[in-house]
Amino acid sequence: MAYQALYRKWRPRTFDSVIGQESITDTLKNAIKRGKVSHAFLFAGPRGTGKTSCAKIFAKALNCTNLQDGEPCNECANCIAADKGSMPDIMEIDAASNNGVDEIREIRDKVKYAPTEGKYKVYIIDEVHMLSMGAFNALLKTLEEPPEHVVFILATTELQKVPATIISRTQRYNFKRISKDDLEKRMKYILDQENIKYEDKALAVIAQVADGGMRDALSILDQLLSYEKERVNYQDALEITGFAAKENIEKILLALLEQNPESALKLAQTELTQGASSKNILDELIDMATKSLMLIKAGDDRQGTFLSEDFVQKVKDIPTKIFYRLITLANNALNDLRYTNQQQIPLEVFLVEAGSKQEEQVAQSSATPVQAKPAKVNTDMQAELAALKKQVVDLTQQISKLSNKPMLAKDQVFHLDTAVPKTSPKIAKKAIVKEVKKSPRKIKKTTAENRKQVYHVLENATKEDLTTIKNVWPDLQSVLEVSEKALLDVLEPVAASSDQVVMKCKYTLWFENASDGDLLDKLTDLIEKFAKHSYGIVLVPDDDWLAVRKEFVESHKEELLAKKKQQIESKESKENSEIVNKAKDLFGDAVTIKD
Image (cartoon, rainbow, N blue to C red; front, side):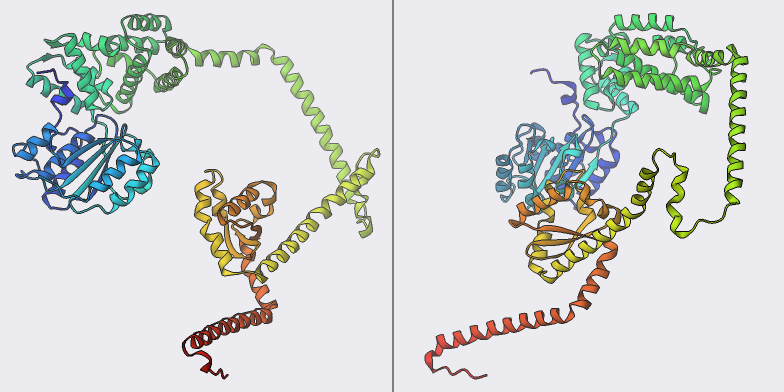
């Protein structure tokens, strides 16, 4: 028989064997026991955390003929067929390679058929975020109201790419990263079952590299077993994963804390030569520095955190600000690694910067210039103070003289330009007059014109035109860019005629500055595109709309009543005409019309 990878061989077959997701597995078991199974589920979370495994176990349990407290028995014909992948009622689809509309339409056409061997027909769609938008739309109605015998289970590692319309039609379960302790326990259990010896430190390295993913952990373990079948060694784990030995990381950290960058550089260079990566060295330094800080601040001395016996004593008396600075610099170096192909350079820069006495040098350099020429600095300051005092005295005398003069006459209000230099009195006077008069005139004119335009729209407004504008509003939301969608929240159509629409503006300031941009032009073009008709936009401030409409109704009351009466009479005349024509069709010329 061909070799089977560990993560496939030891894939969980029951809910209890799923590691680190107890809250989810308990909920699924209880749903099966109580018969409250939803029609659609969405499993979201990082890779290798048990999403597909839980989906397969859940599908198997739904069709199991001998349930054991919500768990599949793994002995009946349906369970055995499900484990072998030959159960016809459990269909697993990879959305990465079957992401088109045709594949989803095929599913939609087949869901109406009853299951052949089990109680439920279960569709497991893995990596569902890879479906195209057309495929998602084809799935919507079926996902919302499938037949009673159908259950959908969607799995994804990128929940943000799944449309909200899909998420709202499912029960969502968020899978979390598996803790390092749980990863190590599971690896120990598997190695014990396989009769393979191991070192605890090697499993700790694998758990740290796996980053919460059980599949990643078992894949690395499989790689180590290919390297050395009889035993899982710590040194082999360091070489395979590229993680530096913790003893040497302790030495590098101590060298940095003791302000010895030369030693730190040599130790780091040794680790790089032996296969460690710059990222792994920085990760381990951050992890160890953080744990050292927790030890100093909270007394959290966890067993196994530090390897050498005297490490704790050496770091206890080091100021916490040094740890803060080291962690910050290491995080910056990790960020810099993403933008360079020479991975060693950010690490070396970090080691030099973190190991140098930079703060003391900065303090000394900032203090030296002040002490170099104290006499000159004091002389300059005294000269500036004397000049300032003289200016204060002169200004005080000028104010006292002005306060003794009589008030200016009303027609002399612009004679204040005598305070301006004699070379430009006319320019100053003209500027003052312009500043006083320009703003009120512009606002008054704008308000008057705006009200006149609103009245014109209200005189010819119809419900049909307003309904047309409101119907295209969702279409506008779908085509506007994210930064422009806020425009639709600011504006609201309140009245429309055959050629113009009045839009209430939420913010007065935006109303006053609306003509400065081209957003309204873009909105006008889009309305014309979707409504198949051109409408000009007239803005009115939200605070003024009710008052303007009330004034219009009061001033045009008789006209509005006459118009309404004419509409009613026209409608009645049309109805009467239809009745007469119908009567003539039935009885011919024998019909006599009387009022």
